[in-house]
Amino acid sequence: MYSEITNSIKISVNPVFLEEQSDPDDFHYVWAYHVCIENQRTDTVQLMTRRWHITDSQGRINEVRGEGVVGEKPILKPGETYEYTSGAPLSTPSGFMVGSYQMIDNDGVSFDVSVPAFSLDSPHDVTLVS
Image 1 (spheres, helix red, strand yellow):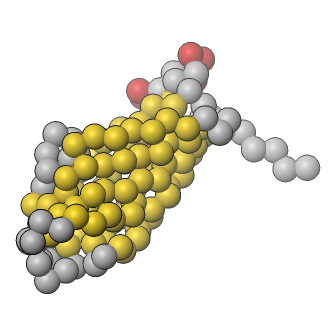
Image 2: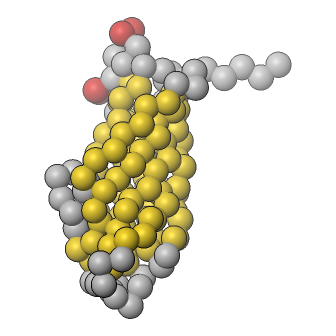
């Protein structure tokens, strides 16, 4: 589990390699990642946008931007959490993701929340130590 707190919003991420959806012979590797967003602030916030940098093991970066997460723009009152699961495919057997969410508070002031960098590891990634 990877966790980070920014502006009193805690983001936790748990990635899982999906063997059954991957096809190493065709250079197709898939991960699910479960995200928990916890509002530790004293005011209500809403997640408006997301931004991801997905980097494969060859250093290629794919940037993803969009409205909300999984088709929603969740509103979190103080102490509430919101959880969702999404997925990421790569053409290499490992990589990592890092990102951010843009949130707004009760007063309409926007602020960014960091999503911690997390590793996308599969059993198909062979590391040799010499």
